[in-house]
Amino acid sequence: MLIIFGGLPGSGKSTIAQALALELQTTYLRLDSIEQAIRSASSLPVGADVGPAGYVVLYRIAVDNLRLGRTVIADTVNSIDITRAAFRATAREANRAFIEVEIMCSDKTVHQHRAESRVSTVEGLIPPTWNQIQARKFEPWTPDLRIDTTLLSVEESVMEIMKLVKQVRTDQT
Image (spheres, rainbow, N blue to C red):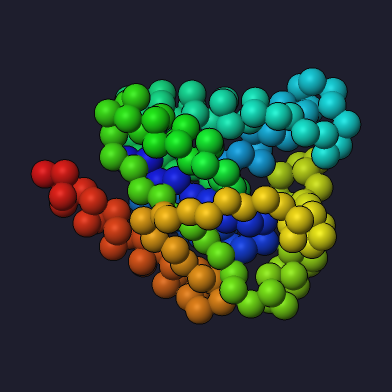
């Protein structure tokens, strides 16, 4: 199964995705890590846009792991329909189910505080500013599950996703 995350930076997406990966003991792929590795290997300036390269690399690694029968968590902003469609195609290419989960923070003050106070866990990565997050294009989406981190804790969020994973797995049998 491919668990496709999406959501703005600072919403709590990576925290929840990592907690879910630990709970499921599964493969965790973080776009920030891949893009920063591309910047470092290419001697690109800090914060340079790597274009679609990071997503393309993530799709290929996901397919490899899905074909091995692994559940894969894809942790990306995933803000436009073209990347969402590519993730769904990735799961289909490996003949695996997928679920789409949007992580959001409806309280702008809390979201801003998180965005401005977080420290990057990816060496060399400079997180986007609050202004950059607000200016980011995020196309409308109808994910399988939408989680508001203003209302749910990390543990509660993981439990909600686990319920959906279990349901999808049951429906497949």
